[in-house]
Length: 230
Image (cartoon, rainbow, N blue to C red; front, side):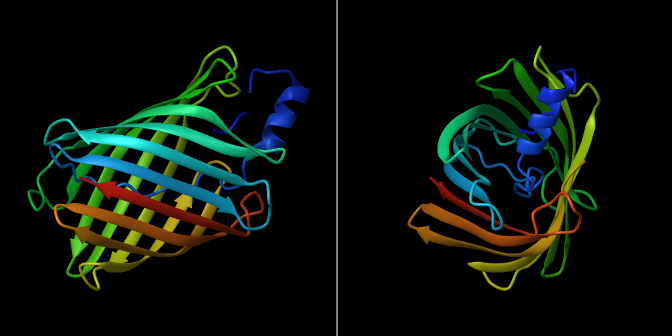
């Protein structure tokens, strides 16, 4: 979570300089939800310039209804050579249309994140839009983010977003290009997405390298994700 201001100037400066320079890079959400699906997920973001720039998320999710998927996260970061759980998060994804019902498929994401050491909450919400063009699938996430709590460092809404265009080369492998942007981060790069079935279960994986497009983003950032769906 980025820290920014209502704190004293010195504290604000320290918070800004300690914030990960890949903070806007995460994942691109699709709009689909499956009733009764149990998901175990782990994903990580690693700055390839800095040995201290690491973030890993551990999650358990469940398809509560055919339109609502809820997921709980523990978020850990490496700081001063130590890896610690720093934040918790509850994420809700809603499928707003059936596949092919409209010109695009629509969903929405609503999440709330809590910094464990401080009175700092972060609320994020916005639409998920996905459009198919033959074997190409384009997905856009457009979110607004707001901080709350006595230790908040920013009072205004922040816009952030991501986009992915993938090629459905086969049922188990899809190359893609991804783009991420927020107030500090701007990055683009290639990714590979795949899945393997084990009976009624499935393992999904994603691996990508994002290259910074501005001075406040790491030159290269590795992102990965593994999901087990039951």
